[in-house]
Length: 226
Length: 319
Image 1 (cartoon, rainbow over the protein chains, first blue to last red):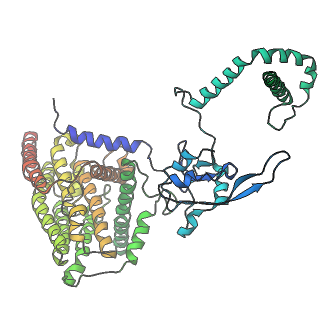
Image 2 (tube, rainbow over the protein chains, first blue to last red):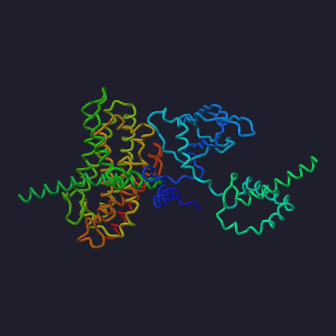
């Protein structure tokens, strides 16, 4: 049954209900917005990770990444030979051209580029929107840690791959590894000392383990050669 | 001397009400409309929730250049805003706020009020004609058509309540009013209020100004203070219409403790009605020209005539 005027009443009800709810307006300069995770504000550069592979500059649809570099010769270590490495002279992103597609961040194979949610970097002069590498480096401080995956999300593939690699290593090792652990048991008191980091970032024990493994393989190789 | 002082006091009070109430309605419209559209509305002017927004707007309008188009009829063009605004000021004189609280108690107050309110629309007609602009002319024509269509139900609605009260005096109508009249005079009240809205050219009856199609119609060529006067006239018109509806159909100052708080009741009812005006504006889209005419001639006029008949029958039955 259609009541005459029901549509009119409905219209009034809609506006009334909207009025009783809080407004959606963001009072931005007074109240900072709550940005969603992975917000694309500005691109930060972790210079140490950059190898000047130029992938970002080549993939950029706007050609707004400028990279200059030169090669430096690393003096030969004893018994080695000289190597060359790239040194970054200039890394600049022109944010007046950037369209925030994030392709540069996607393609970077060495995790040197990151999204930061900072967006307040407007300028009076368009030329100042070209951020040089020290300014891009400063944005690194504002890069948030990656958000935790959603509760029901698929597990990240990297995690599975890493776990599989560890399990494989553990499964392939038992003959060499387990006796080694037993052998080291008497020297346990050493574990009370603060673990000293070796050059590879592992503890002394791990280093010892690696050395013994290496000895074993070396021995095998000798046997094979002999 | 006391008489002169009293007259002066009344005039000052009327002027104050005339200057403050429309601004109050305007500010309410800013905020209520904003929240009905899930916005906040003015937030900065004056510091607290933009309370001074309309004052700031007034200052802005006053600073603007006063432009008269070269081909315009200068005298009529300049006179039009005054013609649009002053009638509402004059009407306020006759509207009773509380028992005995009226600037000038007129015997034929209802006649006076309705006649003077109709003059206000002339301002828009003059502006539309004098601007020498096709949009203004269109707006003026639409205003004229709307005035013709809605003046009749407006008067008939008021006539019904005058008949019921047996007097044309506005305080007299309030004195005669009884709560059950709310039901008895309901159709008349709706007709009066709706056609009053149409006379004020408020949305959804804003075909004559229709900013999105004929660029504010008769007001297209106006800037600065003159335009501000037209806007003020619109809000003064809302105040007057709501006050009149209150006095005629909602029992004016009647309510609990009306000996002491009568004027509060009048103001309260007026402001509630003003809110309804704003509410209707936000909720409904603009009526097309033919819909406007159909509503007036096929809807409001018959209802008003039926109300008149009903009022007559009940009056005879009661006496």
